[in-house]
Image (tube, rainbow, N blue to C red):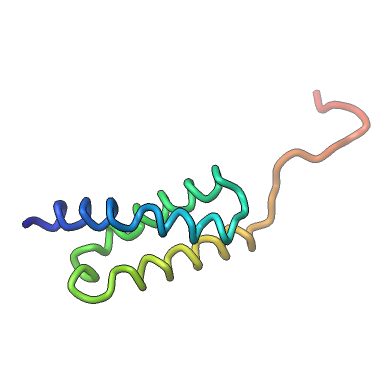
Amino acid sequence: MTAEDDFDEFVRARWTATARLAYALTLDHQKAEDLAQDAFTKLWFHWRKVRDGNPEAYLRKIIASTFLSGRRRRWLGERPTETPPE
């Protein structure tokens, strides 16, 4: 079995648990799915190194660190003003 097949099987087996963990952190279904997808994407880049170890623990660490780094970022979005910008 190739590394890609191993990864696909791991994603199928762990998707539900990963999405639940992400939901427990975000309390929002859409943000939880985005967080789970981001975590699996990041895991993919390290898959060859971690697949023989404990990839589930590594995935949980990715989820936690991604969630926390997103919470620390300052939102620089819309700011209400009295007059609209030109």
